[in-house]
Image (tube, rainbow, N blue to C red; front, side):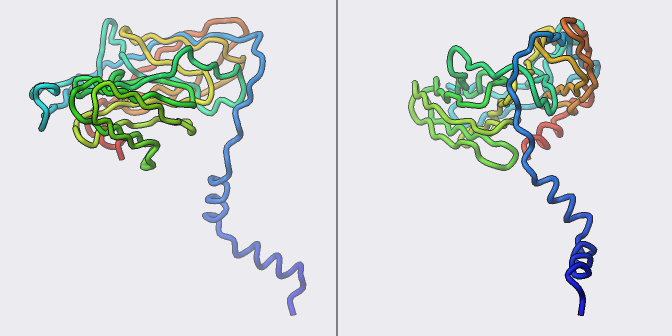
Length: 255
């Protein structure tokens, strides 16, 4: 008859590596810790794109007086010096740093002329106000991966409804009434993120000294990660080049 020790060994031997990996991946990530940062450095940089700029054909199928007609929109907006506008840059898996400040006013996403305004934004975890500025019905639907974060009918012009945002990550915003409408909201649990300006520039201040992974995201391009080292009270310059901006990437990020 097997002893207790032998039974334990038999059980341990029956555990597959896949089971162990799945268990580890399901464990909750360590919570972000807010601390006082006195020797922080700054990451200044620019996101650029050197490739050809493809376009996406928009074909409004309803409400033409508000939504406009057929048009071509660039998949990636590039300004002077090949700088990319509207890319989200953030520190990956940041565990400790300054606290996440509450914004002076709640962030908003506006249904305006059958487009979302802004198209890309970064906000702290908390809430967002959904606004309808159009005289037509919208249904604003937020996703985190395949999971619905909120799903709000907006039948009346001037409606404003606050929706909670409890989880960090890149949210996809769609309109169930006007299928071409699309926007992105990066909800962050730490303050080390930025959205690039018209020239592709960004700045992330008060970063605790150390080595990090800096991520650049743009809806049509491949996600790019680069290592960055922050020194006490110094500014680090970082250029990030995006690759492969295609409509297929947008569809993959919608799934």
